[in-house]
Length: 221
Ligand code: E4P
Image (cartoon, rainbow, N blue to C red; front, top):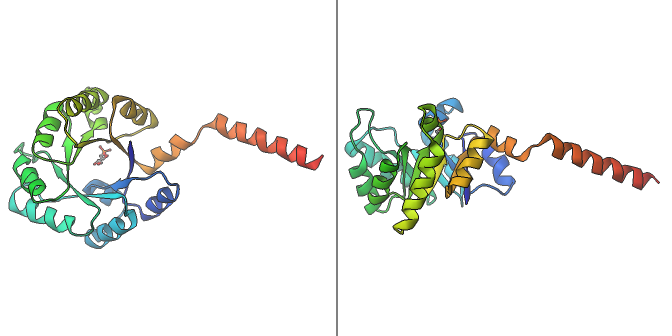
């Protein structure tokens, strides 16, 4: 299973890469805005370099059509390790599957994002996407069951022999990450604060403190 960092924060990417647990980094325009990125072209190139040999996911900002396709090709060329995130549809509900198919056939590694249903995952896989991002938190926000969408999608991909990888995204807490792992996501993308919480447990701290105090007593004897 792969762990991606859902962030455009250079320091966090460096820190978690140093922990030896990262397989890549995901970004989207909201993440860039939240992390204060003002020069996306330069920053995305730098973050892709920093993420290598892990996969760096950068998202298109055009809704559809030839502009989306040429932007995706340009993003793909910023590094050998780049996957281009393309939403499954436009805000008006028009399918982006044709663009996903064209890009995938041209060798661009596509991560279809904004998937909230099994149907969207199935269609994106058929269109050739390499990664399928299910925005679990957003499914849950609308009263759905994001973990169930993941589990059914994983079962479908395995049953029909698709190599595309399912990314559990929009994970807001440690319990979301655990549910995504349990549901069979190939990858989880986790915000830095949630990854930090996954390491922590107050009784682990207490246990380690006990060990260290015992060692001090032994060493002083
Ligand atoms: C990552 O690939 C997604 O774009 C991201 O996890 C979405 O998170 P959000 O739903 O919390 O904005």
